[in-house]
Length: 210
Image 1 (cartoon, rainbow, N blue to C red):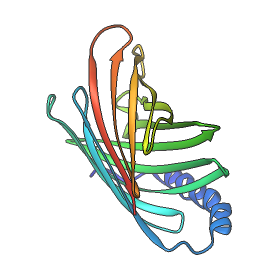
Image 2 (cartoon, helix red, strand yellow):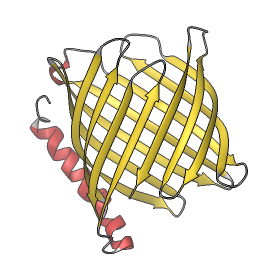
Image 3 (cartoon, helix red, strand yellow):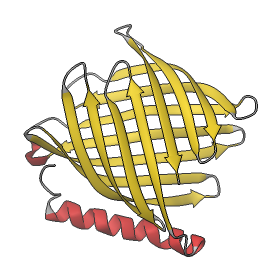
């Protein structure tokens, strides 16, 4: 799967998780064990599936990323924490190490979910850093969405995706998003078009916590 995080980065990750975990654990009490699955299929870029197992507010996770159009494949594993910054603001923060062939990366994930009135904002932020600095860093928001309740279990709104690789121009895409709330899960679809007209894609996604 690749090299482990270097000493300073590993100490930072552990320290950050312990710092963030402390107030959340005191507020929630003994919440027991739980798990999650997060999957995506994309007609334009990579598909993935991540799964994890947690205890109280901390969790371990593993994932597989694959793009059949380019042959890119990635395996990742790491740990993270779930915490709140308010009654309507939940955050997932994870630190992973990933391997893709002979290359390996450190990756940081931040997944905030914030409710403001009827609007729910979600984002998946990923920062990828190559071990040894042999490849450019990459920061992506895939996607940032804002939805409102429509009818019954349905919600809809807009989504935007931003990807920036060090030394290159950022790529931006936007479009509509539709979500269906299921018991303990969510199923959704969005259709994003590059703002420069370089392409478009449809994305199906599923997320479940159990």
